[in-house]
Length: 91
Image (cartoon, rainbow, N blue to C red; front, side):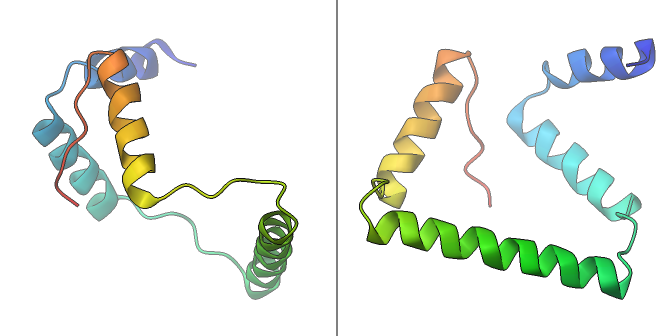
């Protein structure tokens, strides 16, 4: 990792949630991910289908416990707070 990237990552951690939202919006609007070719997109789609099927199977077999959206949100808020951060409510 370059020194510039390390400095940017460190500086980002000091941003207020609203500033971080603005930065992420700017980055998304100015930089695009490289597009996939058709074969690569089909392969990625097939891999996701396989992953989804495995996750459904885990739920149906009782190997995983489902968590409500509210419980998940509380857990994430707790993790943020543990690190002295506050999650942005804008979404």
